[in-house]
Image (cartoon, rainbow, N blue to C red; front, side):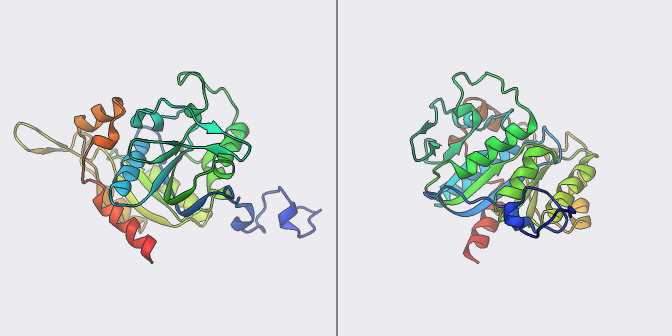
Length: 277
């Protein structure tokens, strides 16, 4: 606590131990009605977090639940590519309108604001964090059952901004089978606990590969210890997603909504049940 503290937290921008996490929360746009907001996080890059976010939104939409994606990975946005979106976001005096995918999933990403999708955003952390906050406060999401926030990996400016500014109902942690997964999962778990965000479940991506010739299951990245890790941190291991070249191809072609897969069915059901509580 600062020596000059007047106990008026609502008027203060300082981050201190005496301040409740809820003091930082921002309200969404007045024309947004979002029932549940779920963060998708990872402790490191390259584990397929964005892929899981996109698949989850598609699977929920198929289940009759209206979904949206806030792409918080501002400098490495790839959500529009997975959905084959070329259209740019529009705006009016009221705010910014997200772009709808072929099946009606509302998407907001920095790439939807750029003239060329390959233009780099050479911004420092505070500016990037501010943009992510604006995606929450200035975008007119409309009526959405589930908004999924695709966070960049790690525990830096953007994840901290999302955890502090957006009222998350919980997070899903995405990991892979490598040995170092224990450390990166623990980082994500510790950050969520410090910010008082519920952990809904753990998803292991690239868990195994099923040979199309012999039908055998192969653990390409080595034997998984994800069950032990989930038990150690008291997390619910919800899904194991196999390596599937067809999924990679569908994503590269912007056709992820056409790909049918049941790998996330358990997580979809978990979220639907949570929403009914």
